[in-house]
Amino acid sequence: MIHEVTGDLLLTKAEAIAHGIAPNDHFDSGLALALRERYPSMAKDFRHYAHQVHPKPGELWEWAGVGGIRIFNLLTQEGDHGHGSKPGRATIANVNHCLKRLRHQLERSSVQSLAIPKLATGHGGLDWNEVKLAIDQYLGDLQIPVFVYGTYQQGRQAKEPGVA
Image (cartoon, rainbow, N blue to C red; front, side, top):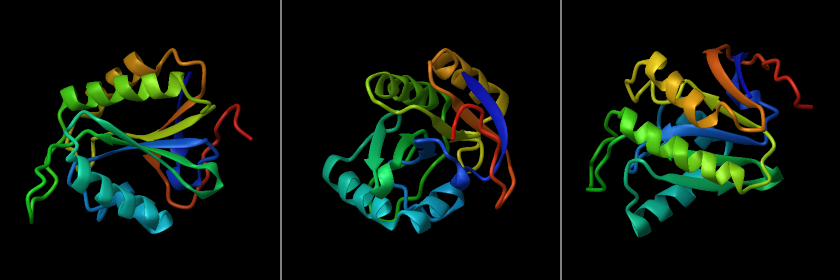
């Protein structure tokens, strides 16, 4: 059940958040920066994970924080692990792989609701219409509410049907 909402994703009542990053992300801009500021241990844990595993675009890294929040970091963007490398652009193939993995994780978890931004359209550079089709394809028939934050409004809590 996909619901497009307007508001501040950081104020979601959903049990989990999904967002796009690069394999070498520093969490220093956009939603990733806001999440790093709210959950600094997540960025630290990701750096450790990335140095150990060297994840590839198209993968998913799940993080669980204090208070039960779960964050699905979708590696939608390209990015090398070399010193000084910067995150690259997203690809629709990476988005598709990530959403497929996300669906699998959600189906086998106890997560009851998910919030997701206009994935890979900011720093990722993809066209929202193309990404929206992928979100509909992979998450549209899930039995949990999926709140797509189509329009960002800082400090405003979105109306999320079915979530208390």
